[in-house]
Image (tube, rainbow, N blue to C red):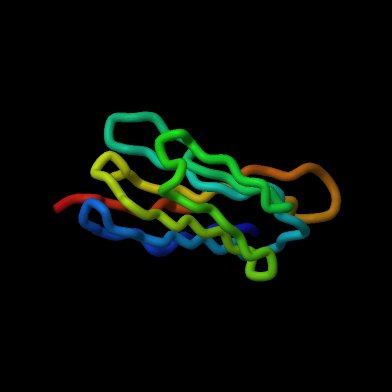
Length: 121
């Protein structure tokens, strides 16, 4: 059974920083892409950033230059460093990973439980 557990959310003032972490555990053969999504109240879930197993990254235009996604394959963990935070970054942030539990078959999407990020003075 695969689990993704997030940590690092909280309340921060505009212009501040936060670092989110998401660790994968359980029966895992390999992890392909990992990334972060967010969902603000009344809005649909949107992709924020993702990183391939080789380290290639993609970012939403709204966070380019402010957020950095990284991963530690040995720890099965993905990070999201968020700088210069704005009130519009307020949302629940979800970790996502494409994981193959065994060597047989294709990977599947797994999601974390979400962590709240609130940017407010």
